Image (cartoon, rainbow, N blue to C red; front, top):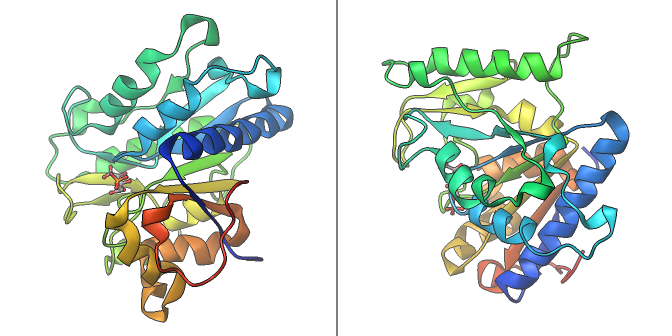
Length: 265
Ligand SMILES: O=C(O)[C@H](O)[C@@H](O)[C@H](O)[C@H](O)COP(=O)(O)O
């Protein structure tokens, strides 16, 4: 994949949110021009809160700066195998932080949750298979496709370098064919989850990470600056998707990273 990921660092959370808004809306606008809908996937963690700050800010009134939520299909980059109203649910988090706060005049997105009937299964494979079927309906209704091509995937990066529910050293990192995989042994609780796989993540048109705070400094240094970081899940996204990847960070998170970084998009 051509090019290097774009690493941006911002002085404040307001500055980051403003740039993230512009980026997401550019992704939206080109997706709507291409196929009339905006298909994205989001992670859990701190991402939904930052995304809400970005998207619920007032528009400057231009069509380009307006989220057209009724044309959005939101999937989950990863989800925990818990009921949808559980405090660990990424669906609940996204609703609480963003979806339930969208003003009526901006329309409502279609959000694609996991199938709640299977959250108590011992093995989350059925959950993963059902989520794949949902993706098939959206991405492969007319033509068969090898992988779904999301317009945008929004990711977090854990302090161990994980992203989605793809954890360092897990066999899932070698998955080549499946779209959605089951994780039964997540080091970050809860242990049972489903996740998009690396091929799906790296085939997206655009991929953005949001990683802030001094707690991310050591892992970002490994991911960007050190060979030992090359096998970390977040680094594998960088390698697989190159300059399709944009990192939104703050200054404490990139403290000590050697190569130049740009301050605004
Ligand atoms: O559901 C999850 O657990 C997340 O999707 C996970 O991959 C998250 O994005 C990272 O752990 C970063 O989390 P923070 O943004 O909170 O650091």
